[in-house]
Length: 212
Image (cartoon, rainbow, N blue to C red; front, side):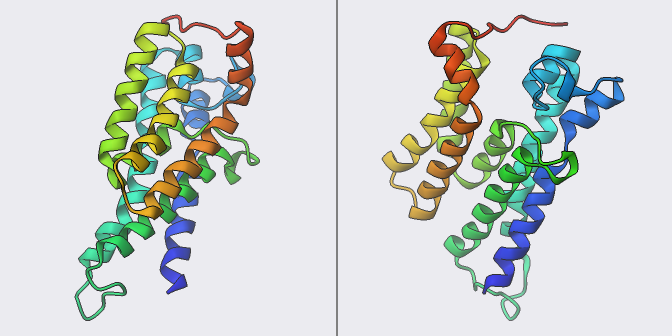
């Protein structure tokens, strides 16, 4: 019973560890770890290299979460009943998705391909959450969009969207594993935003300025 979870976690980690922000920036002749904020996430790539590069990174980072959370579900339900490790128990299959997504966010944040440096996990988490818990995921997207449009702070939008996920998960009475995952991922993303939170409180955080 442990092996499927180990496989899901390992695949999730290595998917999450794929450093798309670093690779896209490198293709433009830029070491993203030495440019802008030094973060390889989509926001910094967009700030340094423009919308096309930044949106490309966001898309691929989100897809890491989608695949890491989604492939265990398809794998589990795609097997013949005689081969099915978990029968047709959706909650058990979802647990594999949870393991995959958590590992993917950890891989994104601490990539073995970039000396365990990485992004803050927002894009990867958002992609996987839309697979595993679409309603809280959509709520987070709405909160992010509303906050960003009204404040122009990407970090504040990400923080509030992150907080909205476990709030929605617990309020909607989702399965305990999903609620715990939402809470844990929220805590990790908030820790990764520690410097941003300090700047927001000090009034020194930068507003988003559009780069073509």
